[in-house]
Image (cartoon, rainbow, N blue to C red; front, side, top):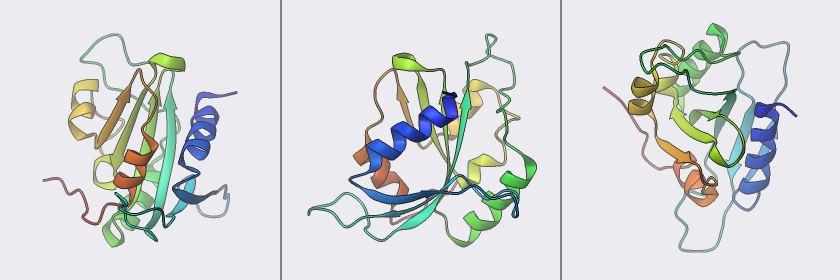
Length: 159
């Protein structure tokens, strides 16, 4: 099973208590992200906004580059995807990219908001880490925290 498919399986299962999500596979509209979601109403007090919906593009990278100054290329991140994410993000800020680097227990999972996605594929690892909203390294993703971040009331804007 590929890293990206495995990422989707883990996220789908881990987020099950917090969302309804649909994997989107379209050949008719280039750039549409992989997953549409809506956050469920849960027990109070909830750390997230029920009913919030958005999009997530899933990407996976086998490993970080060996050299710190090397630009990190993200396989399969196309200009059409970046453009779609930027257009939708400006209208509804709940558009994200979830990136897994590596596999297994030592995997690095990073969440980026729409505003950071345009620069991805042109940045080094340290530059990418400056733009991340959340990062889980060598530990399981905290799915309640992920739900809270995906459904935040306030957008995360960057200068």
